[in-house]
Image (cartoon, rainbow over all chains, first blue to last red; front, top):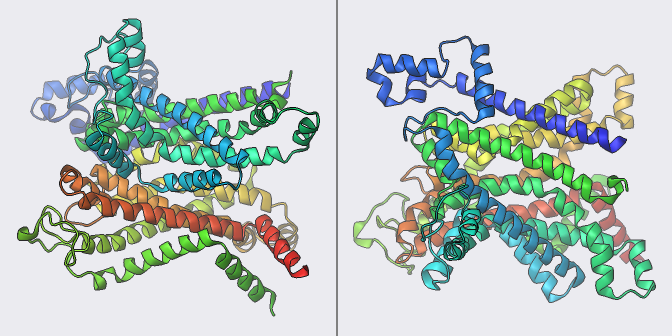
Length: 336
Length: 295
């Protein structure tokens, strides 16, 4: 079947891109004019030749390039990114703390983006050319232009410092036991409702900051898509059948109009990731964004490599999943 | 009237009618004006420290107030326009031409070469631009120039994609076929036929990107990887003023508003440009106008 072959092609493409990403980072890491001793081993190794030899062997830095590449591939697959010369831990250990925080932030933001964006777009489309429509459209346009760092600070100022509705920074103020590392999962597992709610309170402002720009884009897309579908013949047909307007909108129009916004889920995710980097700095969120910023600042070479690869792999996988999801969502391609 | 002049005057007419586009154009024009002439208008230098005057709220002598070192924020914002404008233009000058050339050739040749180039572009696009720019700027040493270079280095894949799809559709056109049958070389066809006819979407994208790039450079400076003190780059000013936000809100607000306005202006204007230049929407506008003359 055509669709099956397309799916396989798409997955293979994803794997090729993943390979390319890892290869590119490898090439860049070996090309950069950085003193490998300082980069991988840190200042500690500068005076200690035995330590240098040990670490060179660990990272296979003395071997020919293609052998290094082979080990690099294997290490990336197993999640072994080496030891951070700054923190002294295995980077995978540090990441295991940071990744869940960013993941939760991004996922909540994605949810908010989709729900708010699609809702606003639908409302705007059904009430076309009314005050609501104009207000939503202006807001959507404005919100895409606001710089993330300023928006976050403004939210902090208004809703935290002045109104006191939400906490200013951080992920939580209550202690919670780490099992998986994901706050919302762990607090539910241990039944720590207090921490769960506290986590929710802390995530509101950062999630709003991250998703603001994307909400505007999704709202505009949804509106345009809804308007297009509303003009189709089958809508007139459904209305002439005597169906109430709500049924027409939700059963027929919405299903078709929602497809384009879902297809941009992948791109939205990539831009959300970037927004998260800045937002985490503003809200002192203990995630990959602050980790990346501080690692880059302190020139923690292995950590920067690790974060870059992780981010890219994340983007590729999410794009792949959204492409497949778009195929599934569009009943024309589903094949039933 | 000659057709080209008529078309141009129609464009101006449509622009006049579109209030939103006019607003965008006004903002863009204003921004370019203060970017170029800001240093002459500014009442103070951007680095004149005056510790007696620190933390003064907006007043007649200091329109936007003063910062923690007594520097006039209004002047700094004006100077900041110059730095942002320069940085944005440089970054796009670096990335757009190379990206467009690469994409045009990739699309024109199509087949295996085109596929391979597009896969490589996909790989580059998998990396979040901000992260890459941060790493590059940090590796080279944080400064506005290096941040600009970093953005220039990571922005080209978008242009490759754009011109690739343009070239793919254009190579089927009659005039391309005609040129090739007359013996035109590939290079000639691309430069003479494919690229000029891709100008519309390229120019639209460059316009909108200018705002986005300026916003991104502001973000980089905010994080500390771009402009360093005492440079009055808007993002940098926001991060510097952040500590004092509760007592001196003016230091953070005005640069932020400027970034917002600039991004908005270019976005609105780019939207209008796209409607004007895209042949389909333009034809719609021309038909509607023509219909009006009938009534």
